[in-house]
Image 1 (cartoon, rainbow, N blue to C red):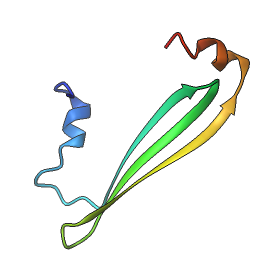
Image 2: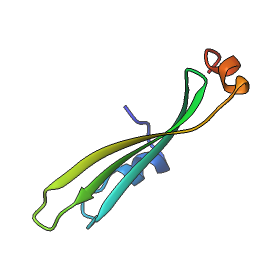
Image 3: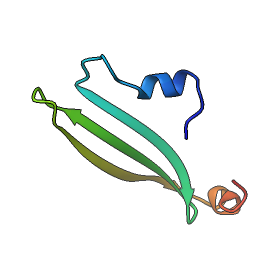
Image 4: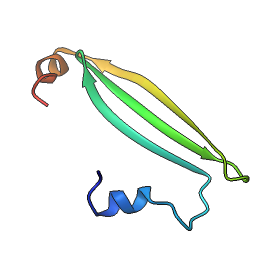
Length: 70
């Protein structure tokens, strides 16, 4: 559950006409920095399409040593 605040307000879209929403997260997985983008594209008829894209950004010893500390 998301606590009250600006992040929760941004995710609540009732009463707004949205075209597209994107949520981007960054995580370290097996020593690789991964950027994950989840997108919801809205259509005029009220339907929508969800998609997710994961993109490895870089790998390094710095990330490998911090992988289990986060």
